[in-house]
Every structure is written in structure tokens, then in C-alpha cells.
Image (cartoon, rainbow, N blue to C red; front, side, top):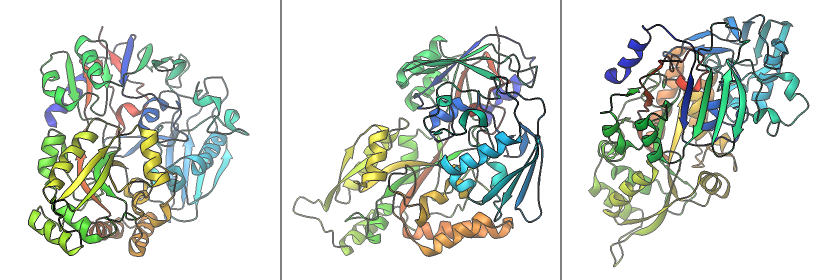
Length: 516
């Protein structure tokens, strides 16, 4: 990882240049260019180029100024005061004020998938003057100060959203914001173009003239684009892992891990606890005994990741419990538990047949399912792998609940209350809401721990609650955490200063510059 990150440090010592066009390869096309009502990766990647947030964060998730220049938190953790940047204008010439902040926070609380939790304790946003916004909470929210990036909590123009449906508002298709780039065009199925904002509040930025976000769904085509120079940058390992060794030999490419600390992921095998098979904890324990995580990481992810026994990612060191699973790799124990559960081998040596679904985002889903199918066949479980596009997958898992178990991934983000609680909190079992409590897990003790940690200001007590939560999940196995992926940003060596914040290229990329 140190070797991969080295290029960034060297690049930042060079003198930035002005001008040029950056081609940003993206793996899928978004439904909207403003991440107000969605957490889809494709939208997050685009949103901040036009629509900014109150803060940005260094690699250690320490806040830095953006639309807010100063901030303070009251001792009781229930009042956040922000001083806003003066003389900022939206792209249509309207002034940016505290009224836009107040409106956006209340809107995020209502319509944003994670904002409904992040801002749940917000009672009001006071605007004592045009450049002061005061967020007032009913209870502390210790994670809130980390939640204010442009992509996670976009500040939108009140004058364009007020009185409209935010989901269908035309600003999502042709955004107007305060950011460093102006929206130019969106050619569906092809690309989005952003151009330099000549009136940006920081007169020295942005450095490039144009950014072209090209949607290239085929990983092989993305590899070719990096090879021939028609693509400048892509993130979250935008090529097939099998291509990495070959691409790393090319002198024109740089591979980095900078800009990934704002959102760690955990890949997992998720059970439907209403399934005729997996409602029995012994069956879930048996499957846990079948999985060698280190072998899976090597085979499926080519070693690009870190084994995790916990739903809280290893990258979140402040909260992660590294204790190994109580169900070590042991096929004989798995066989014993399946027998005890009443699923004995039949004449054909099969105990039962069961479909396995996988989240189609990324290129590792089918490979992982194939690995798991081979492993489970050794204990008499016959797995049928079912593929689907993302809308079909989401409907099957979260609306129809027509599944038994699935290979899935969950973003932890910057804090477990924001990224992890939604998966295990019984109150977040909501049919039709993607990436909520898909297992239908319900444990009052877990609920109490998660709800307590969400409002606990003492970091020692808060960590203790999350550690106890992880121990319960490990014992009850509503799912099986497998590994935290290591995501790479791939770029042409002519690209510099692209990932200088915790959220990397999901930020505004105002400082990116190009060699001629």
C-alpha cells in the first residue's frame, strides 16, 4: 500500500499547471447528477463536481473548510454552529446563504437514504444571519461532524428546489451548484461534460478546463482505455482484478490507495432469517465453519483486501473488533451441525438445494458465489447461482424478499452509526428500501447498543457498545463478514492532485491538474 501511494506524494511536490481535459472513466451511469436522494456510487462520483458541502476531510477524517469556514460544537453535543464562506454564488448568479444550508439539511433528513438517520436528531436549523447556520439537535450525534462532505450531504439551491419534488426536480439532470465545475451536457449512455467555473469562489481553481465523465460498463474496455491513454482516471479498482498485474507493468499508469478512507466496505454472505433453511442458527453456524476467509480473499479478490470477521471494517480502527469468528474453518463441525439441524444427506449425498444471489455492482460477485458453491458442496449443500441486474436484485432482496442468502457488500462509511446500524437495526427492516436490514435481523440487545452508541459522546463508552455489538453478531451470524476490499484508483501519470481528501475523486477535484 505504501508503494501504491508513493506517486501521489511525489506529484504534490510538482508545480501545478492550468488547462486541459480530464477523461474520468466510470463503471456505470447514474440516475441523477446530484446525490440528494441516492447513495448510488455513480451519483456520488458526479455530484460534488457541481454541488458542494459544508466541509471536506483529510485522510484521517479531520474536517477542513469548504462552504463553511469555521465551526463549533456545544459541550453537550446538541448545537453545531457554522460560519459560512462569504461572496459565494450559485452558477445561476443567486447568492449562497444560510437559508440554503437550512433547507438542504431538512431536505436530506427527509429524502436522503442515509440522511434520514444522520440528521434524525435535528430539530431545526437556525439562520441568525445570512452567513451563520446553527444545527440544533434533540440528542447528541457524535458522527455528524464527519457527515458533511459534498457527496454525502450536498447543499442545494433552495430557490430551485422549494415547492418541488426533489426526486424529479430537473436540477438532478442539469445541476446548478456552487462548485468548481459548470454542468455542460449529459448524453445518456455515453458521458457527462463539466467545464471550468470562471466565477468559482476560489479564483485559482479549478485548474483544468474540462472534465469528461465517460460511462464504460465493460471492464475489459476500461483496461484498454487505460492502456491506450483514452482514459485518464478511474476509481474503486475500475478494471478486472485479473488485469492488474499486466496493467501495473505499463509505464504510463499509476496505482493509488489515497482517497479511500471516507468509505470502507465489507463484503459478506447475508442470510434471509425468514428462510426455511437459515432461520436455524445451526445451519448458519455450519456455513460459517465452511468458509476459509484467507483462501477466499486470495482466490476471489487476488489478495486485494483485508480479512474481516466483523461487519465494522478493519479500516475503522477506532471501532473494529479483530477477534476471529467463533466458528473456525472446520468442515467436520459443519457436517455435525447440519445433521443436528435435521438436514441429513440424502441418497444423492445432498442435504438441500438453495439459490444464492449476488449484488451485481463490481466484478467479483459471480466469482465469490462460485467459490462458495464449491465449498458448500463439500458438506452436501447444492447451490444454484442466480444473476440479475441491480434493480432486479434490489427488488428481489429488499421488496419481494424472494431469496435465501446473498453475496452482498455494505459501505461502512466514516462511522458505524451511519454505515453499519442500518443493516442490523430491527427498526430498519423496511421492505422496498435497498441496503436496509435485508436479513430481517431482530435483537433487542443489539438495538439498544446501536441506539446508545448513536447518541453517546464519550468515545470510550461508545467503542465499548460497538465491541459488544460485534460480539453478538459474531455469535448469532445473521450474516458472515468476509473481507474489506482494497480499492485502487488507476490513473495516467499525467494526472496529479486528484485524491487529496478522504473521499478522493468523490470530492470536487478542483485541484486536479494535468501534464501537457
